[in-house]
Length: 374
Image (cartoon, rainbow, N blue to C red):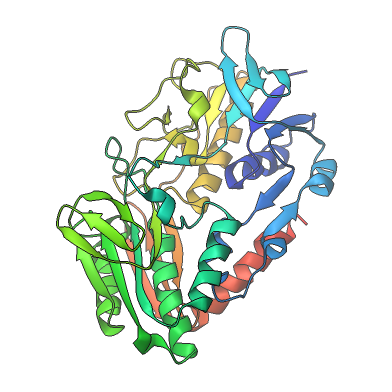
């Protein structure tokens, strides 16, 4: 019996489990992650408004794993022994015949003073603390920004920052105190969000203009003060800051023997196989994949890559020559608490559509997505 091991318990890891079962594989799977739970990061955008609690976004996976015949090892990965085909963890070694790495990425926290900012999508605690501070403020300067990985420009996640920006603006207006705050959006990129498409950039910047949101764009980051954002284009006041740093691969990849990209991610081909390493696949934020320069690091893309990885794993297991490539596709709803903007991009076309109902569509998707794991 082949030993299939999956690293992670996020979107890509769970989609790999689903895809393997959908393709007819019924043997026991082993999944390694610190906790047997899924945390739904996309809905952190609603936490500052008090619309979601940590319990709302945390789904215990024990029952799901029992239904899917998954053995869970609660441990952190510390490395690989490729020669022996073993995963090294804090709870011992795990042997594998086929390995799917879906353990996500980590933030680059090298900027001086980064301890002064709140990082969206890092944890519930960070976003909840932001919301608590905002509720106590009587006015001031709020800053929202993101940056990338200088060695791999595509390794960024800017979409949620736009949602926090517009969501906080909407929240303050609903509370009748927007006039007491100055909001500033910043990015070292001159055209932030360009990976969403040219039309999306223009739309987002125009929306900031309509909402009287200041911008500070195209200046390299220097760091943060307790009450400031510091750039090579000058500093500006910031009493409370949301900042999304660039991404890199998990720390344990260094010394793992896997081929790494300049940005520190696992090199993969369009089938999610790791070149030169038989039996190892990668899906989601841990990988560096070929494709258009706008290829996103987002949950939807992770799901598509996980399906491709699962199909190719089973092809290799069965000695079949099939090659299943993932579809490059960007789909997101930029939520504002009251409405939303649907953004779609593929190699063939792009779409942007704004409507109030899209906010509720995003709420419905959250409920539907999490229901399958509850």
